[in-house]
Amino acid sequence: MRNHYKVIKIAATFLAGVLTLVPFFINAQSLAKAENKEEVLEGISEIKVETVDDRKAALLTIIDLTLLEIQDLENKLNAFKDLEGRYLDMRSSFLTQLENYTDYLNSIKELLTSSEFTLESIQKLAQELKDWRENEYAATVKNIVNFILSFQNQAILKIADARLGKISLDLKRFKAAKLLETGTLEPFLVKAGENLKKAGLLNDETMILLSTSTTPTIDSVKTVQELVWQSLNEVKLAYKLFFQMSAEVKKLLKIGYKPSDPGMKTIGYQQIIKYLNNELTKEEAIND
Image (cartoon, rainbow, N blue to C red; front, side):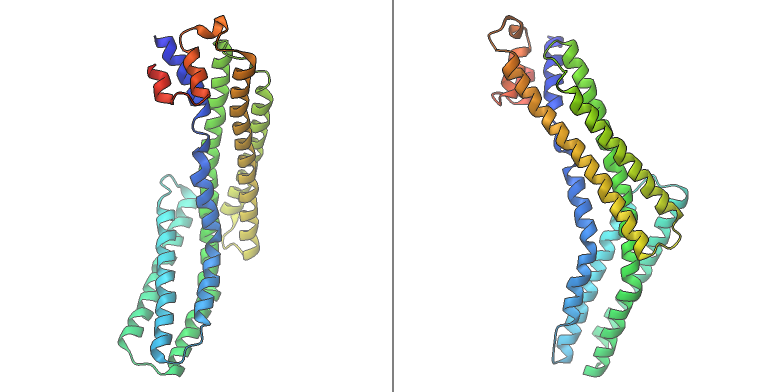
């Protein structure tokens, strides 16, 4: 019975968990689009309004959205638990900057709600806020996004490498259990390994650039982001191969063996076939 459980789990876990990285990819993509918020806020600041109250409302909207963005960046920065040395100092510096920005925005917010303004004075304040966003805040956000993306990419690589190792072990177990021939699957595994190796080298380059940039320029930030996207693309290519391997396992079981074949009547094999054919869930296959 233990062998029954073992064989079922080998096949089931091989095909499960391929989507592990999807949330990471989505998060990285949404984070990289953070600078698009600047366009939204820019649009709000350009709205033509005629009254002081309307201008106040527009400014308060900009401030509230910016404060939400700051909170989101702080949460992402604080999510990294194992930073050391230079990277720990960088995070501390970023958090201090964000805290100062929060104080600055709250002071403007308090001023807007407690003072009287003319159209001219509210326009002057709006221009000051716009200049601050363009000349200071935007550059800091780009640097923080750069930092977060780099470490998120590092986490993605660790998961992908672990998945590669798990699949490699599963193939060995398939072969040892004589469940199927793994010859057609091994080239997929080799290629996926090459993709992840490239991804790792790109990540190493990213981390070096990150650690040596005292005050990254816009060009260096873009370079880091380009390296991150290249690395993520290699990981995506590896996962496409994982999907193809999953499909190939199903194909080999269907073409190479029949449920009526003597070897396929051994305890566990019938359940595997039913699982792969979506006739049983993973839990049902294990408990059958």
